[in-house]
Image 1: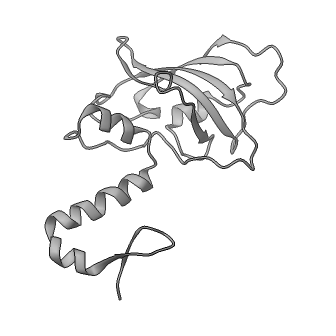
Image 2: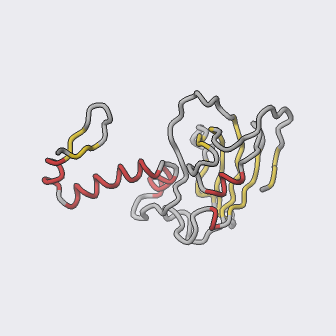
Image 3: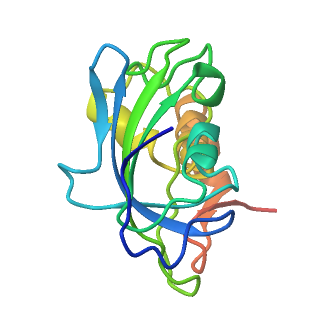
Length: 175
């Protein structure tokens, strides 16, 4: 971990369980950028130290202050390992992230769940879809993928067995 810019007025540093709002750019060691929050103009929010992001982020962003910038060099064992991710991160890749902590929002503030998944994303998808899924919670990926796969196998049978529960808006099995 390299500190690129320190915060002059640090009143709270990040700790396990805090929700962080960050801007980041992720690249391979050869300089190829595979993702960045900057062009989207939106920060990436996640809870630190609870497995919502790769272990390299959970470890490398502890003790960070608002306004601080760090460079994380994340070995494969703390990133995506031998599987890689989404066809954009090769197997066994060491990753470089430049991360700026924009803020540590209040614990009462609601946030959209997001994460860097800990498993490989299917490689048949187009790159924009891969990058979008790369930062989607694994539970959302599984919910989105499973019904679609079931429909492909037995469309009529599955259509009759599934209904949308009005409160949850997720497929539920009929009994």
